[in-house]
Amino acid sequence: MTVPAAAPSTCPQQYGAAAGRLPVGRVGEPADVAAAVLFLADNPYITGSTVYVDGGGTIA
Image (cartoon, rainbow, N blue to C red):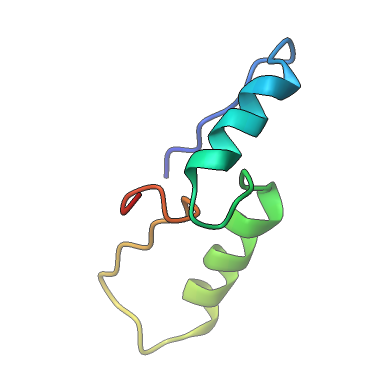
């Protein structure tokens, strides 16, 4: 799993601009990724799935 990381010097304006382009209207938090991982780990019926945790960025 590849998780992009932001440099500590990233300014809040960049986050605001990114949030404005996403359908959910905000940037993702670590808890968003954790919820997706827990969902996949907790459901034994899911196999071979790709789950994009990107706030709708792939469709925006």
